[in-house]
Length: 185
Image (cartoon, rainbow, N blue to C red; front, side, top):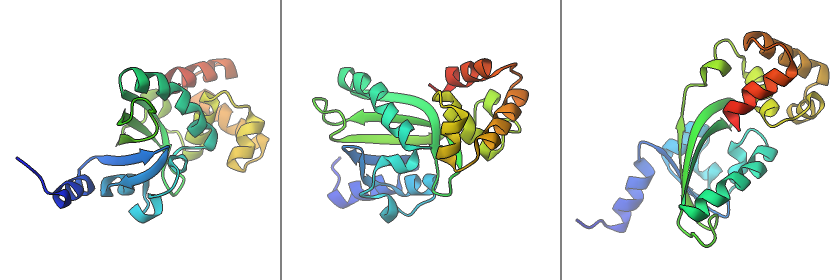
């Protein structure tokens, strides 16, 4: 069975799973399911950095260290993490990637994204802002750092941390960090 070039392009575009082809972490192509998942138009995603779908630039920068060894060794990488839609909503996602250039893993790679239910200990009655804060807590950020990233006051972030601690039934910030980090990192 052989396919014409147009059929392959149509198949990629209409695939029922969110797919993106990246060149050096820039979206070279993406399909309609990817655009729908991240609530953007394909044209608004293509040619732009994958950083736009991460909760913050620091998360985007940090994840590459975790990707490189598996991509070089096996050509594949997969994990679960928070991602961000264009309207700022943070959601739990399974990300799987395969490099097409093993010598330079990020030169050309294909990625799939699948929205997952938020892990039970992070779900329940967590508000969108509490999820944002939990994501940053998992990265070891202080309330002051989180406040700056989210455009909030440090006192507001502390309030969100306290509510997270109550909802997740932990006694202190160290337990909160450990619980969230164990699941997100």
